[in-house]
Image (cartoon, rainbow, N blue to C red; front, side, top):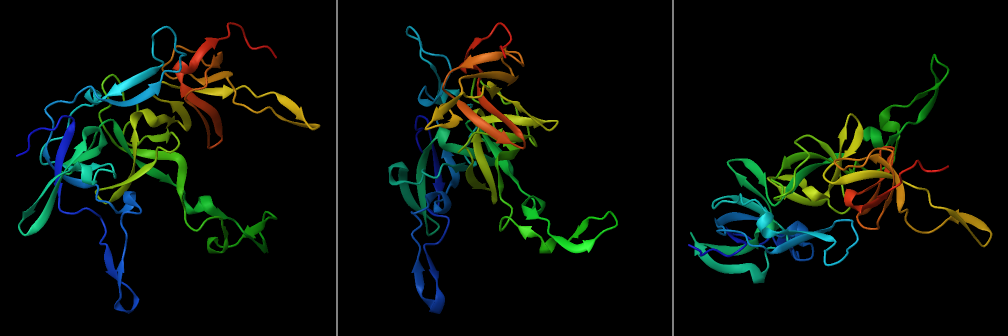
Length: 333
């Protein structure tokens, strides 16, 4: 038995990599594959839990800018700690974890079981993506598992017209197999996916999405993980920007959507062009959970702004705390 590691889970596994490092090549030659060059693909990211910590301490795990400028002795950041994670991992669970877990510094010990080498590693609680228990996937530490929203063949095919004219006087398209193809195969749609598994949010937070919701997430949040032989994006609750309701994107969490004011034009070498910079005011398109109203003309800060352009909808997504002023009267023409 292992004594409890504060904030750490101990698990065991009998392999370090997902792929064999050697295989037979042409002519029966043995080819060595360096599985360390792409750890997210090759390293083993699963194991069986041996022990869990008795409690989680107040170790810092993330920070988010509130949007408000700092003043006096108040911090402009909202902090989250290990103790904000709801402890749900149990001994015997199968867990999936961050790809940087299987490293020498995390090795606890090795031993031989039934003639096979077994490795015991530790992983920090917030680095566990999910547990699997009784066939059910239980996301951990506010993770949401998302199925990528894939294009269809119709999305990447361009009709090619034949020389045949139909009854309506229009040229008839050729069979689909003769259409032009923009891509080799359909790809994942940018920033879009479907919720498949939701985890318990961090203490003090809420989860505004459920299974089946089509969601929009922040850039670079789509980290692919293979869990139970299926590829998912593991995305934190706070990285979900919005979801589709009746075909329209609405904000979730503390997000609001802004139609930014157009930047002024400037003349450079006799040529008119948009002045460089990022808009810092605009009109509220969707106020989410905030006290703002749709149509408010507002001023906002520089933090936590993300331009979104999806399916004909263009806006800035930001935390409602970024808004520091509302114009009392309608914006002048």
